[in-house]
Length: 164
Image (cartoon, rainbow, N blue to C red; front, side, top):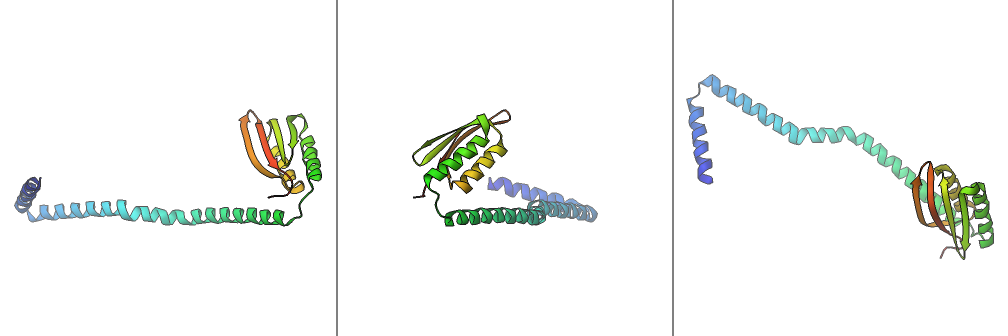
């Protein structure tokens, strides 16, 4: 393999030596242009693209950080609130479930409440969760929801009572 490379290199040098000065200059210019193109495509362009995209990516990361900080702050505030008695939590969950109409059923067993939904839209589910978290201090434990037509079907299990 090494001999083949050496032979090829010697043949190229011999051909180059036979070229006129003007042709040698053209070969050098073309070689320089190709080298520049390779350096541009492999080194400069990716770095340039990264620099161009950096402000947008940083803004997106900052927005996500602010959102996570807001969620963490909300969690701290909810933890600081006094616990809600289980009977009150059950009443709040039943009231929130009644607001959903016939699309939802609530079953309470001990410190867990299971909401079964059929064809509920995302906004109604979000409202129920906000009421459950804020009024009953319920904590989501398990969700098994599937998209069905214009809404969701499935169950949502929340813990009520004092966190352990």
